[in-house]
Length: 464
Image (cartoon, rainbow, N blue to C red; front, side, top):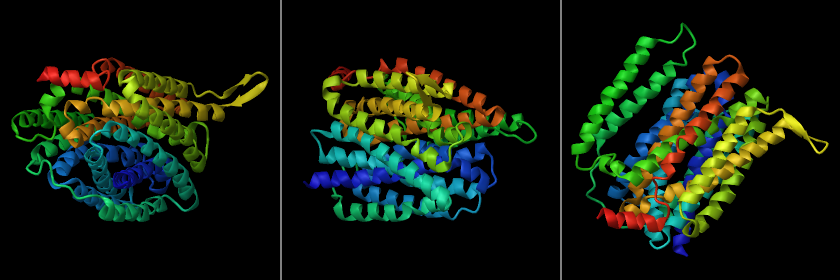
């Protein structure tokens, strides 16, 4: 019984981060008006959060291995609550972006810690329970947009962040009293701060350069763009050199050089762009193209979340029979179909004498996207973990890093397109067709990932 209480406790933490991030996506159109800012800068409220996740998740996995799961889980929850308070107090968009970064630092640590805790509590059946995490996030994605849309419309966007505080305190108290304190398995793990700094600097420079491409006043500052891109490359090269010789690298390049790990992370990066980043802008799409209210745009995300909950729940329990390849491929193709249908912006049609409204179709298409993500996510989350089961937290952090980087890039690229194409419908068409193409590029990577747990074990034995 105790281990199920532990599972419920870490799921509360995952629910906290999921609810918060999905709330923020609903508030985007309101933030632009209230803080008198541009879409590209407002997009950093989402992409800045994802960017910090990119670097902080693998670091969190290392800290969890070194300091212990419970202590790290509690520390990151406190950081998340502090970030939420600062977000609510933001006087301008720059403060809000900075506060979201602090919030992201806290949120980034919760997932790797949760995976490590579950693998400790369920040593024989951890793939199923880590797979069930894929059902927790959509629950937050139902709570977040619906409550968030109502809060933003009735009280203002600041109260959306205040909502996180009592929720976070509940997570904090349950983790203090209910999580077990275990002996650290990797207490002598060292943390690669130099590598982390170089990686963050490189990715931050790249994202900042992309942001400058969306500048409206006075045209694009090409000299600054070139300088930022050059800096990104200039920091990335020494990062690669450093990671090859440091004892405990933030990213194990030899791990990434292995075929299955490389394929899985290429998939996660591209999936993050189309399946996470671009789709996080659905509320803005609904407001600008279908003229929905903020509350209605939040409700629109519900069918996506329900689809993810149902599909990921079924996939998690059937994975031992289905393997990894089939659900990842089927889910990815379904997601691509959903993205393509979103690009059509259908006003509706007649069917058997009945008028099917465009908004109704939009709800159906969003549900298709949810089903695709729900089928693919549990399998893609577990693929490759069997190759190094003793480093589940580190591998989970690495996987999350690539997904978060993809998500940040997806939001930035989409907001640049939306900011530079005057025709709103044409701009959204370009965004979703681009997402289709990028997600299609992820399909070949699926063939390089383990087809099932048995093939993972075979690969592990052959590598030895």
